[in-house]
Length: 78
Image (cartoon, rainbow, N blue to C red):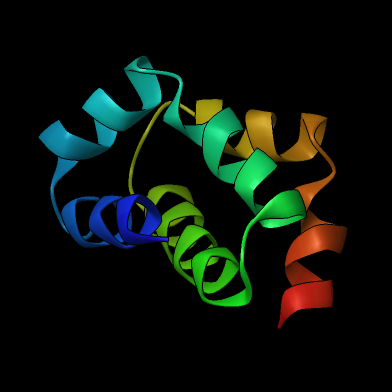
């Protein structure tokens, strides 16, 4: 949960950190946490994914989310 919270914080308004998270395969890890983490951890993971998805990027996060069918999972949590 703490790691997901930290990723949510650093992914907010920092293109450099967003690219680092994406490059380090952070999105699949966050999506996995949505399925199996604690409730508070799932909330932090959802915030991190949101921060990554709304930032300007090459579309890779959107594609990863679509591939993992995370939209349904995020809706379940929210």
